[in-house]
Length: 483
Length: 95
Image (tube, rainbow over all chains, first blue to last red; front, side, top):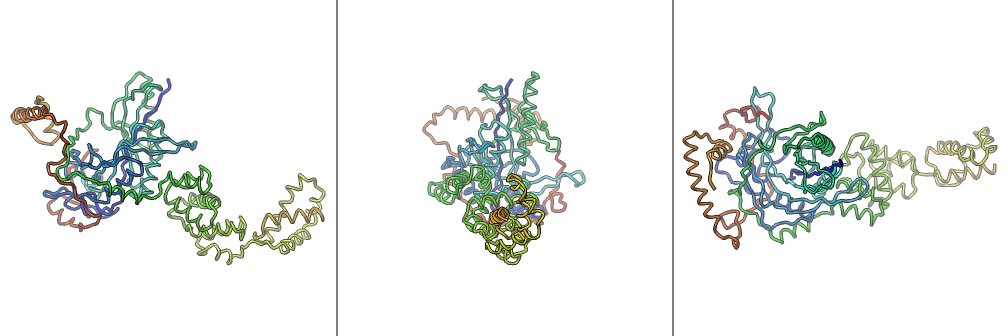
């Protein structure tokens, strides 16, 4: 039987505010335990939460970026459960009237095709603290610095049909939130994490199968692996005549498998109700319009502009718009050198290659965009040839000079295009290699084509790589053929 | 809507309240009467009434995103039963 996989994602994004969602305590990462947990975060008696305007603005921006409805009124609810890293005994969240209504996210698949994934809603909530289980004489240590950090939870429709689509969706969300600057998107530090709902059904069946929810998947790669494992597990179960239980499962990246955490019967009953400490949040049209005006160009728009206005291929435009840092870097290079295609080639070729080798992100590049732009300018205006350009790039990478021009001067890499100078070098090479010249002249045309490479190499060497290779080739051919 | 002994037990467990059987019987009766009143309210036609999320006719004020809380850890931890290396210690939670 042919099976279809149905996937929905709940993505938690940590918002990049300075202070917490309901208190004035700092959200900075890596502080001393509990040094950023104030009376509100600790849930001490008599405190009142006050909502952070920046968290509201960030959620609204996200909503506008995915063409979602922004309801006039949203309401905070209490999600009640007991756990020591949740001192109030409830998480303040939004259940019935979230701040962002239904919207849509466009994903791009490997073959360049696009697909719209529905977003059911996105809501604001607070994060919990952290429990440390090791090394406290059999007790658990609680750090509440993270308690009250603003999160936005983005709940998708069950619109994805493969692990690849789910990963593409997660990447699209990542690109949107980092473009908007509302989250650093750092998955390793937990700034973005997701729960994955997976079910399977026979192809053609309309009703959804029973789903399992996989908790806390924290990388693009793990999302794909967890889904692929879970899909296979469910298909195998069903083909053996079993049934899929509705349950919560954990993904174990080391064993590459998911395992049961709790079943539906043990599922929590959170007894949501509107939080009496917080009043309804009312956003008027002027506020929403103000946020709309502050939206930057978004990934999909940038990709289209790179293709339509700069003439880049769909592939190049997709890669260069995949993150804001990459796009910003590329645009500086392009503006400095004035040639979009050369800029694209250098960013994706030499630069990306070097970054990958050293395992650096583009933000950590030792070569600044302005410097690479200066280098590409000299390639575009023929000041240096391709070989010299690579040498200049390496020098910039090693910090041997501030600009390409400085390095070109210091190393004498300026391309020699003076015919007289090149001819003099060619004459010298011909004089120094009589045997090779004879061989060349006795060879037929097909062989000559290959043999000329030797002479080009000698001339380039004599010019310390600075001769214009096209000129060398043409002049050599002329001289050897008539000699 | 009738409430059963089991419902009371479950609600008490979720709220981490210790009830003995006599307490539970008392709440079956008490909460049962509250729910009867709710049933009565449910019969009122509210089609033309906008649901409200809060009894006060006011909207949420927002605060500027500024760090205003200094570190008062030592002060707060004075009333904690057990702390170590800045952490609050609690009975072990099994994941």
